[in-house]
Image 1 (cartoon, rainbow, N blue to C red):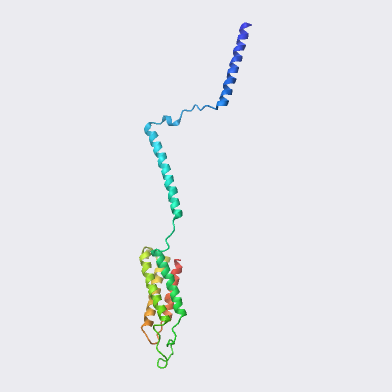
Image 2 (image 1 turned 180 degrees about the horizontal axis):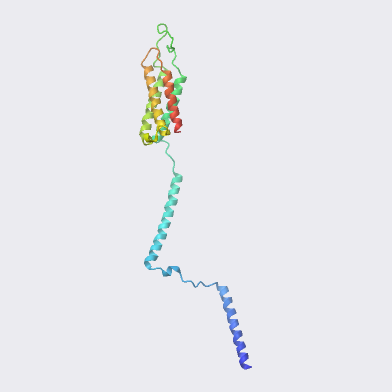
Length: 211
């Protein structure tokens, strides 16, 4: 009877101990008995791991800085390519202004009588606008050759927009300069409007191809 009573007390004591330990564990939280992974690393491996982490952080910072720089980048208002573009547009505007201001007070018609009418005015508004157009056309071609020379490649074929742009631009400018020179050096009626207008149209098409 005494042995049974002692045994029962022992069982009860063990049960109370287990309950007490569980309660304590719940209050303190679960203890992580896993051994830290970095404890298995040698000093060299630990140093390499730290260096790799630092390098990754620096790379991330540089990438963020580069992205911010690209977002803040603003294209300059005036560059060689912009100059070529502005000159091309100015040439077309000047050509249109020249066509809209025909020479007056002189003999321009094919059937005019140079004996009864005064000679052509080679220094009037029409003539001056034509000269400005010629200068702008030449400047457009020069700046285009300087800034876009690498875009021209015969192996791409003449159907390539860049090649067509060069061909039409140079041909159009040459046609206009020829017509202007022909008209400026003659005080008698001379046919020049057709070739000048054809040259302006060629330049306009060339501009539109790469616009």
